[in-house]
Image 1 (cartoon, rainbow, N blue to C red):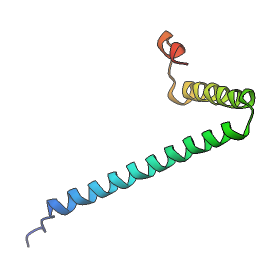
Image 2 (image 1 turned 135 degrees about the vertical axis):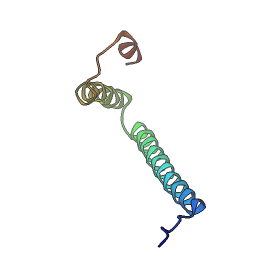
Image 3 (image 1 turned 45 degrees about the horizontal axis):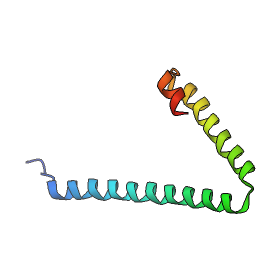
Image 4 (image 1 turned 180 degrees about the horizontal axis):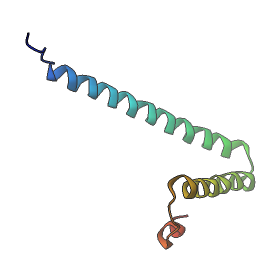
Length: 80
């Protein structure tokens, strides 16, 4: 008995649709976050909005330190 040959074009199409779907979902999520951020800026005072964004940046740096075990280099501190 011969093993069945898989069709390469079907395999590539499946990979393409999976990656395309993931990219579309990530793009929609990013645009939703940007939209909610702009709506938040519309309805909140600038000082409150800037505190929220600054705390988000601090939590991102804090959790990246523990999750990735990444050292804080001068380049990372400069980017923050």
